[in-house]
Length: 136
Image (tube, rainbow, N blue to C red; front, top):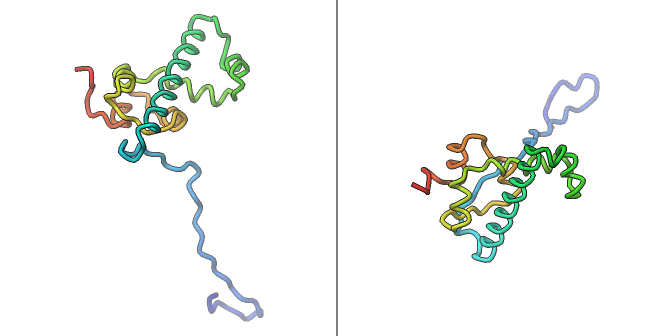
C-alpha cells in the first residue's frame, strides 16, 4: 500500500508484477547430469526421430507423401508437431554421426532439439557443444 492521493477516500494498492516470457529458454546441459541409462535412452530416441524425419522428408520430396497433414494423420500427431520434427532431417551429418558413435553426448529431448535447432550447420554445432566438425 502506498500513501497516494486519498482525497476521494480510496486507497491505492501497488502490486509488483512482471510478465513471464512466452517461451522459456532451453539449454543443453552437461552430459554428466544424466545417468548412463538416461543418456542412452535420449540417444536412441534422438536417432529414431532423425531417421523418421529423414524418411518423411524423402517421401515429401519424391511425392510419395502428399503433405505434412498426411504424415500427421498417419502418425496421429499434429501437423505442427510433424513440421517441428522435420527440422531434424536437416541436422548436420557430422552431428548425427557423432551421436550414433557416442562421440557426442547430447542430453536433450527430441522435442527440445527439434524446436530450437538452428538452420546453419555451424550454428547447430555450437548449439550441441561441438566447436568443429568431429569427422575431420
